[in-house]
Image (cartoon, rainbow, N blue to C red; front, side, top):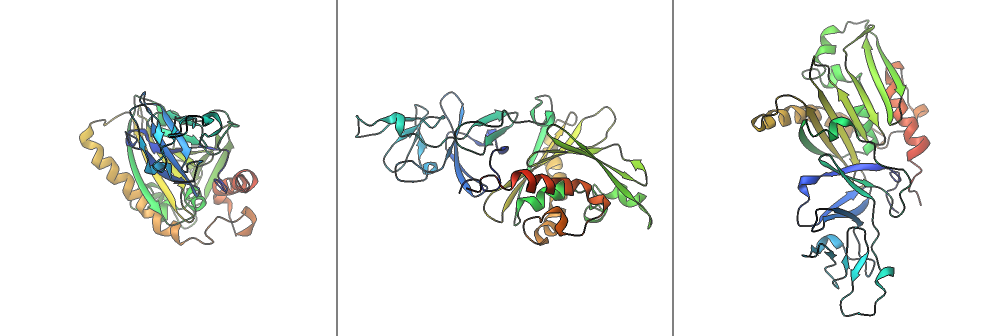
Length: 318
């Protein structure tokens, strides 16, 4: 069963600078994959099992020729999954002995995979400009949470929790303005990439907004005059009941490397405020939109649930 509930989508999985001379094993939606670079720096993404005897290719090595060598019998594969040699078998029909490859792209600082081996069905990945623009400084923070990825994803789209979970950080503005009779309205706009949500408190907007990039990216636009500041949350399902959250801050100011620890601390603190709440949510997987009691300020998260159950959850079920 491959990428159950997460097939036929593009997703970022790794910072490109973390992929060097050695293969890297990742688990995405319960499926192990191996990433590696050839001698020219091109990236390959294969299901992490040799087609010969099912051994993990990630235990192998990348030779000087740029081919990934299986540790068991030395079968060699290029970044497209094509078999480039079967030792001790000069008559082997290598063209029929390839490994299962996934479409892969390196865009900005990130490596993206398409979660179905073989033919590409969904075009190219739709990447937020702030993850690809070489003129922006970016800060990365990673966390592993014990939850279903849908709980983490809808949390990232949920504005009403900010003045409570994040009362000392990004929710302070809302907290100061709230009264016992305050009302939050969520305005949702469908887009080609997913959707855009704007929150108004008592009819007044903060000037910021968030965007949902299907299937698993949130982009928070933080309003600063004459500046670009974006916070991205990339929510990746890994093992069953486990999620890797990658928070990426992009900015066109304060680019000094000496400031990186400060930005990492700030983004990590905000992510850590969410963890206990998200991990405690039940049931593990978000239920369909009609199965829980919801209110008007839940509009963005309900839009995500409709997308998840209407489009994504049935993918990869076979």
